[in-house]
Amino acid sequence: MTERSIPQHVAIIMDGNGRWAQARGKKRTSGHKVGVEKARETVEIAGKLGVESLTLFAFSSENWQRPEEEVSFLMELFVVALKREVKMLNKHGVRLRFLGDTTAFNKKLQQSIAEAEELTANNDKLRLNVAANYGGRWDIVNSVNQFITEHQGKKAITEAELEANLSTSQLPNLDLLIRTGGETRISNFLIWQAAYAELFFTDVLWPDFGQAEFEKAVESYSSRQRRFGKTGEQVDAK
Image (cartoon, rainbow, N blue to C red):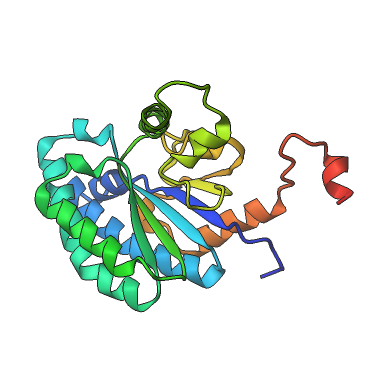
């Protein structure tokens, strides 16, 4: 491949598991199983490409509205996947963090999350962030509430102070946001962080997302001029 700039921070809305399964006459839950395997492959691809931080949208705060059977399956799948994958992630130097309000999960899942984060806390290779029970609006409100608690409402909040309390405060700025599955919206995901991110939408359903499509997204990102409010001439002059 030709020389290209690699985004430091990539986020992916992993959409299409249920539709992928239904198209094959299977239950939606079988698509989620395949989706977990695809997430593992994607972590490996991101590491090989040189991505520093990868954030995967696993479960939104709105997903609780899905059928109870599907939600229960997803909760159990999280536990199983964590126990199965965390040792391998740790072996390869991946630091795992969860973004979102994990207090809503059952005690078993909360414990698995805490153990996985603790085990990988000192790793310095790829940073893998799993957004679970996460919503962009929740993230912003939560940050403001933390600020109010810390300052007792005595001063106006700045952008930098709000950003310092977001769940992604320790991560690089979001460079590239990918959504699979054919939808062209960000669905309350990283809405503050996506302000200047490059967006890449693909019709490919998540279980079919592979290295070729990931590299296509990176190529698209690399070909764009990121101006951040400046003119193209100003950027070219640097």
